[in-house]
Length: 162
Image (cartoon, rainbow, N blue to C red):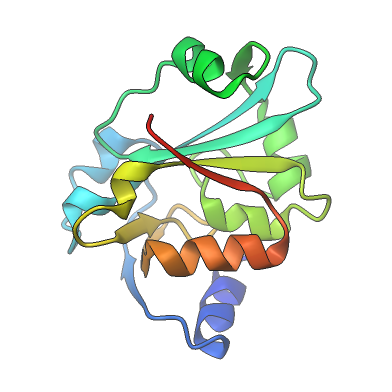
């Protein structure tokens, strides 16, 4: 799905969302310079793979959070983790670097990618801001709606402390 298809899908499924269009951003530092309505709930997404290139993971945390891949590996009993290539990102989720998002899992036809979602998103507002498969916008969703959407598509989600 591209950006417009994501918007159409959310509308068709009657999923509450707000859209913030903005210039293309490629990292959290660039996003911090943009006026967004819910700055504490924007997501940072890391697309990683294990050392055998058999398992792929999308790690989604709040934008200001650091991720220790070695610690995550130990806590979740995975093989050694490293960043997946841009070719893998395009082949599996149809995304380019800078546009990584949980909504990209809707393009993962083989359901290869496991989502590790930081449990901090389950807190007070329960909002999450993610790209709509394009880094020129942020879509604000209820995190429970995002979880249902991805689970109904068939990918595995692990809500964990990161």
